[in-house]
Image (cartoon, rainbow, N blue to C red; front, side, top):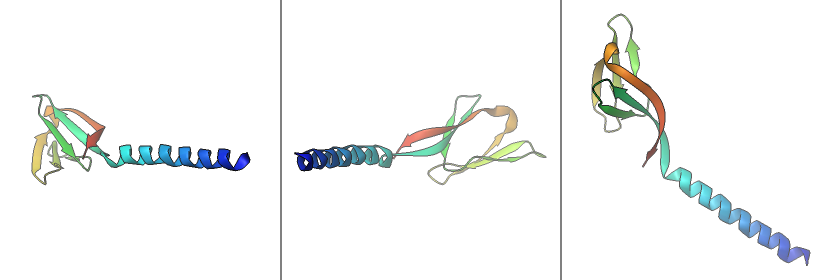
Length: 83
């Protein structure tokens, strides 16, 4: 009687683990950068701030680079992005 129960537990555990890994493989954590004008950018790295110039430098997920003034930055947050 114990063998079928432990086998069932192992199968259930494998199914649950497989479901979780599938969910996490479809998403990745990136930075979502939003400006005061409503533009949004997504980047693998947090934007670099050049304090002396007051400008953020960022590279989006497509490889495009941008310079955004510090006064135009509204929000920088971590975000789950669908691959």
